[in-house]
Image (cartoon, rainbow, N blue to C red; front, side, top):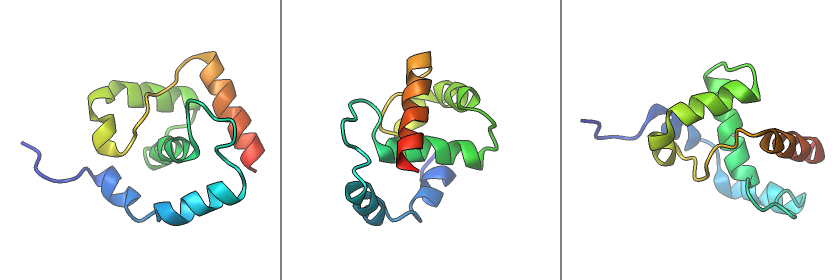
Length: 97
């Protein structure tokens, strides 16, 4: 039986969430966001980077496969797989850059 934290959540602990939230607040990153806030988007894309996934579709499929472990990985919201979800993610990425 697993008794400790997952490696992904241990690596995620190195990211200072307070500083991240300060940047989000400074640049209005969560302005008019209903479903996927900046932190959860970052965690999902960070997961994709660490697992060398090449597309949003593959990230969503991989996270969907680990649906029961998402909370323990540090992902608080469900993974969006629909086309509207892709457009929302891409739109928020464009506006944050």
